[in-house]
Amino acid sequence: MTIQRGQRIPEITLNRIRQGVEKVDTPTLFQAHKVVLFGVPGAFTPTCSERHLPGFIEHFDEFRKRGVEVYCVAVNDPFVMKAWGESLHVPDGLQLLADGSAELTRAMGLDIDLSGNGMGLRSRRYALYAVDGVVQDIWVEAPGEFKVSSAEQVLQQIPA
Image (cartoon, rainbow, N blue to C red; front, side):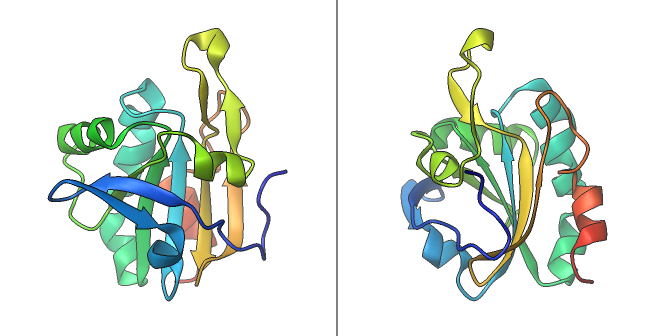
């Protein structure tokens, strides 16, 4: 079942690259923070690279002015996430999180089997807004769509 409003982000350890591969758990990422987490099917895929992540890059300062952290998660390894971030000039502070084994994605019920497209188990496209680790709102795209999880739409939905 997909995670819902009022539910806590599951406790999972993810990877990110800073000075090397660094493990970071979700309580550390979400506690005492306002966060927009958006999930994408894969780094370097067309919609993710041309529209989804670029929208959050473009509006990153607007989120920060509201005191909101921005995290992107994908079912990719941390090295792919780092290379993707470098290719799109992701600003410092916008965290790219690697959920290589889809543990967080599955725990939130946001996994999708894209084996028919040669991609295996991936994340559905979504965005959620959490305060202190509790989901306040979530927007999950229908397969193949990109509407409700865009940076622009999320900015309209979260408190100013």
